[in-house]
Image 1 (cartoon, rainbow, N blue to C red):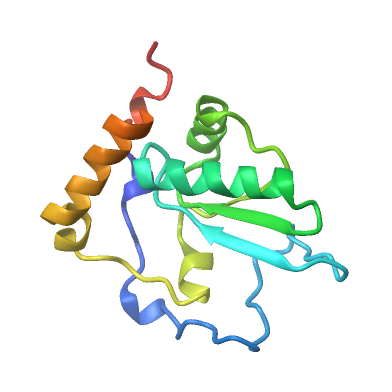
Image 2 (image 1 turned 135 degrees about the vertical axis):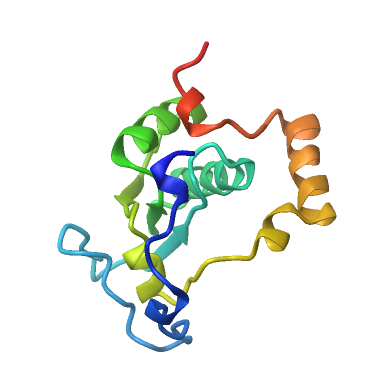
Length: 148
């Protein structure tokens, strides 16, 4: 299993989710929010996840149609996996990518680890199947991102 799927942190490292009106937690020293634009931050599942792909495609479409927004996507996969995946899903357009394989930013924003049941329950599997059959968005194991 790829290292990007392992979580070295426990849920004790997760803080409460920020509420509307709270200052945004940091996204690291390399990410600066523009003062003149609203910012949308999206936390993705691992690269290869059909839900992450769908979310990312919606975000890139939003960034293309609304230049007044600053769109940020946070990836829990490695830089290498994310770079390959972005090319496969069509590019990042105006979305700023932040890489967080240790999920420190996820935890700082109140996002912990889901249960296995949450990820593989019948409803989640049905939605994943529908993304594949309806939109051609299928699960891709990260180590196969180079496969033809």
